[in-house]
Image 1 (cartoon, one colour):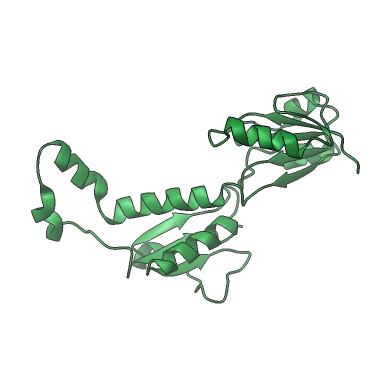
Image 2 (image 1 turned 90 degrees about the vertical axis):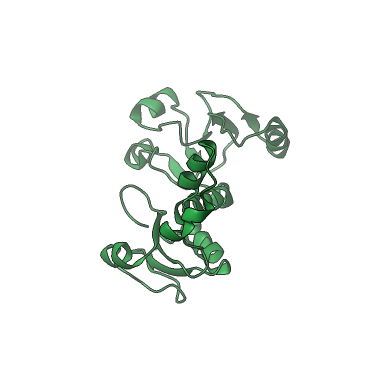
Length: 203
């Protein structure tokens, strides 16, 4: 399949003007525009753009839909297939950003950062209350991962490097170094559970 025209629908907060200029240069061999174009054969979207039958009716020439995300809940795969187009995702593009944000939230919970920050804002130095709080370090904590795909696997690597004990749940299977646990076991025995799965399944 020879594709000649590409169009970007939706700009991510991560996209910079310099990155778009570099992208346009890399795509110099085809007709590429960094704005919506209804006659494009390749359409690149982000998570804010819902690709369904209505969208495809406005883009009749579309033959390939690419989402610049790992998740693809915003793509109606049945509608895309019926349209005669293919769909692809780019899970590595945002992988590290998602993992870093997940680690930040995990540490915030384990370290009770919000509670301590609220005390500081109220003018109280809460160090003396630490023994009474369920504050934990990441090293030695037990973390369950629901979904161990591209992002979940990188999350596991980061957690292990920081000394956490990791277990996982994924119907697609787990690496040999990540023990399997049920969701019930995770909730009963883990200090934290991190979700890295599509809304419809845990692949």
